[in-house]
Image (cartoon, rainbow, N blue to C red; front, side, top):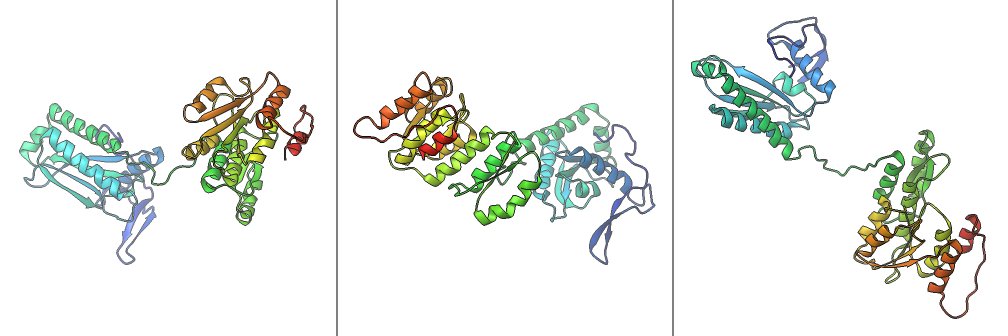
Length: 374
């Protein structure tokens, strides 16, 4: 509540909004005036400033009316239709009017748009409810009753509940975000290049300059920008690169995809030769869970992807994860007790008989083995 007693919120001269008929526009400035002249703009602007600074979701101005023998409740919302929240404010005003009149039993007067100061200059959906008329003896008697005032409060609270129940702030466009800057860049790359990319640009996520200057290059190459720390490639960035390449490679009927751990290289290098030969995209995973990029690729191709070849034993790809993969597709799980026997298990599966020309490479580091796979 901006106040709980009969006090002003701000009495000093502050910047307030003023309308000019000659230019049909508003200006925001200090006018050296304070108090009611005829409206206490400084006090009203101070209320708006409090709500705006706090970042409130709603602004509700609660009033009692006066004027002759009129009776009942009326609610208002912003009439400046250039404001993006006008529709939400109109909905809020209608809910306030319905709930207050229902709970408190006051006469339903109207819901209308009007340029009252606080509903115009609060930076969120705002409505003003005039509960009853002090100048009407019957309404005044109600307003002096604590029971009646409690019913009004319940009506306002229920209106707020109903307003939020409609999920009014659900974004029209999907939000691209994740837990870290690196995972967010991966999500943006996958959203921007849903069919894959011929190239990717990897830039530092520890400072902004390189990634900023990469934007024109991104356009020229039609390549997403992925962020990475200085000394290593994050799992989310690596998975996004695997998924972008997989989309570009595409799926061949019956071939399926290869899933390997993105944390260690030996099993991944064992999978490179047969994956390339059969046209099987290689997707990276964590030990116990699929990264977002990998999970999204599998979900998007759930209908035409019937086979997954997992290379690597339980220490690098867990039994539970393989079990989840098996729930919706055939999984071939290839591994041995060490990297060398896992390599042989792969060879026996994809080159079971006939002639072959093997390429021998060290398994204690990855560059030569990766080159050999290609």
